[in-house]
Image (tube, rainbow, N blue to C red; front, side, top):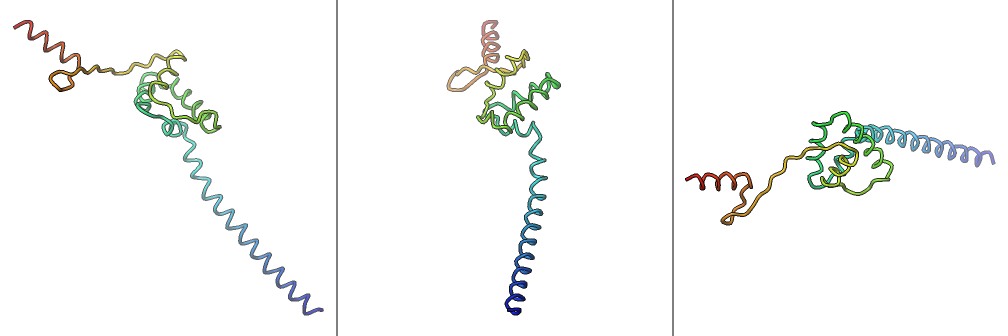
Amino acid sequence: MSEEDSELEKLKAKRLAEMQRNISSLKKTETLAQPEKKEQKNPRDIVKSYLGFRGTEVLENAESQFPNETKTIVQQLGQLIQSGELNEKMDGGQLLQLFRSIGLHVRMNTKINIEQDGKFVSLSDKLKSSKSNEET
């Protein structure tokens, strides 16, 4: 029986060593994964990843016109995204509507194009050319 006991003890020791190696390798992978999460926690990057068509343009205009207020809003949006309460992409129009509903009237550069002779020409250029044609 002592021979069986010694073999059992060897198996237990081997199994214990294997479990300790598994635990230490698991801890290493967790510590390697944590810095990636910290890098991702920048609220602006999180919000930017959820912006759709022209969303980045609206965000940049808001940041240049209202830097402090925009920073606060971006932090709140980042928290909503991380918590899962906001999970849909937000396009530029929706983001602009959000800023305006809060009272921040973000000014956007707008350009109206019209078709003339098969080409798209800005409305301001069209008005300038029609004015110069009237003068001559």
